[in-house]
Amino acid sequence: MSTSTETKKSIRGGEFLVRETKASEIFIPEEFNEEQKMIRQQCKDFLDKEVFNRLDEIDSMKDPKLMPSLLDKAGELGLLGTSVPSEYGGFGMDFNTTMLVAEVIEDIP
Image (cartoon, rainbow, N blue to C red; front, side):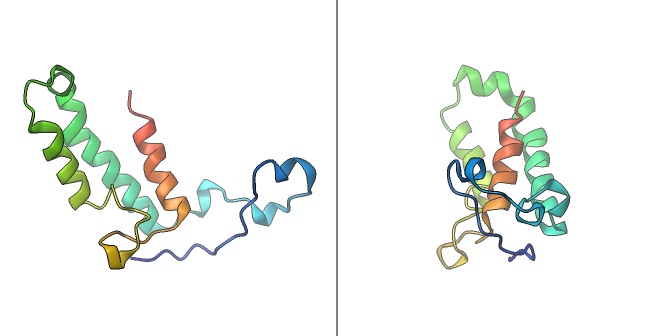
């Protein structure tokens, strides 16, 4: 899989404080392509169907096979290797896609 978002020069560290940044250099959520939106939805669906309804079971840690099985399922969906190059079994997606998945995971209640 590949993305069609154009590569933009990333702003390093606090560089945005000392140099003028053009609006065209800033990535905004409206620039996500359909593939990236589908990956975001896939991540949300996985969390809704496989994780959120089992939080008590996960917290109790009674089943030592539960977390490895959830991680296996997430890996099969590509959620653990979004930025890993495809030649190594990942999706080979860009930084923005990886951060999109991280953002979905971060919003866990």
